Image (cartoon, rainbow, N blue to C red; front, side):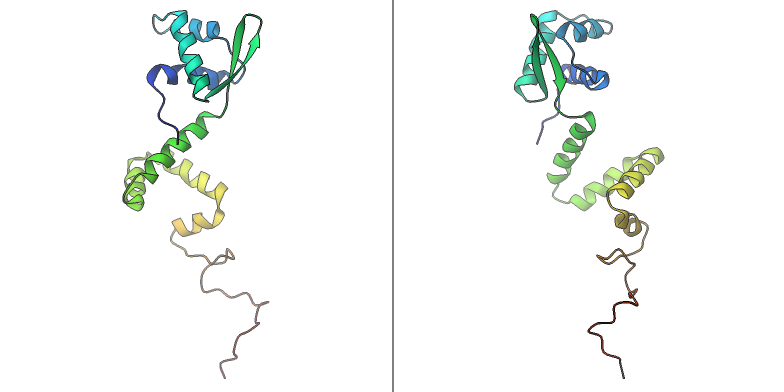
Length: 152
């Protein structure tokens, strides 16, 4: 599982993710310098470290490298959440506490995400129970009467 990025690593990766194109150390440096005083060699070292850790790939472009993100910020965030959750001694309680911290907008985004991943889970979360077929529990498929006794 990935470890959390340091502050400067995160600042660099944020730009790589936002720009969504191959970037040079110079481009990242110039953007970072709008917020803080930082040396070219510092940014170069951070980007080289990110490459060594597998966060970015790089290609030679003249005398410089162009760096591209290996995965998305969403994938990074999901991996961090999964890692934190899997370390809990009570995953259900951790989820309840996490959901309790969410804003209404975040809860709605969670509902939307769950709907996209598994429509059956949204019914369960809403209080209904479903069978593996996706039908609510206790409902029978009238087309499937095989193997049942008539009850007479």
